[in-house]
Length: 322
Image 1 (cartoon, rainbow, N blue to C red):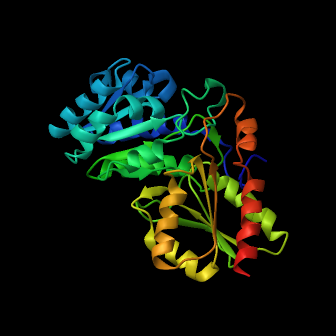
Image 2 (cartoon, rainbow, N blue to C red):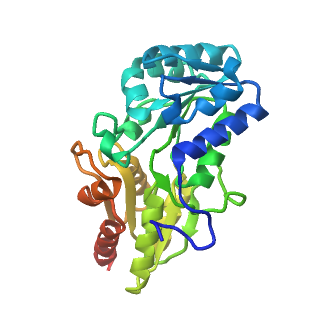
Image 3 (tube, helix red, strand yellow):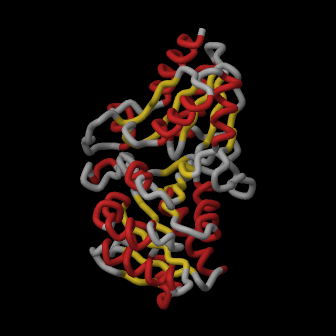
């Protein structure tokens, strides 16, 4: 069984494939939705919209700054633009336009950063987005969504369209296991999902690290340590209530993210915990480094993003609170 898979649920699917399905379904339901792509539609899976709704699909080419500006213009005319490219490309190349034309103006633009994290593997570090949470986190009006499985990705696409204002949605090339049934997935912007109950500590994950957290929790249970697991699918706004409750009720927190620790989810949760109910914390994520290219599993192991890394961090915080 793959990472985090649950018996009785469908097999893992590539998140970009699910994104393409959800976006096409959204276009069928809402004629205001338009799609922009940076000449990567077969990679980002916006190709399906181009085939069925060519009049609502715009291939801007390898010109991410221009794509963001056009999306801002479309939003100002009442459309709901989804602008998609590799996360590292659209954020790094289009950041000035994202800041001035979208964030500062508060326009209703949806930015989809595909191939987030390190699990795109052999494409190498130039294509990997390991700083996207920090970059978008520097744009105050943006909502940040990081789905953890196919069901949350599907829900996130529709939630992004229904939310008025700038949204960043992280997608991934890697296949992610189902955590939730497709027809029974709770998803509310700003509301974390409790996917496992526990009393000794809380593991807070986002993206692929939620499945890793569930595997870690199962391993910890064999040692008599019961871990609560939170799926923090929204990084802005953070679910303050769930985080404070975790600190008060379990007394220790581990965060896990496929992102640099500097400027990532864990640092924002740590600030909130320090301000409200300080408890021992540990942080699983990328150290201050760029990564190699290679197979996804090998990279996750090399850079400390495995269930066992979460287990070791959990043991430390449980010992620290004793």
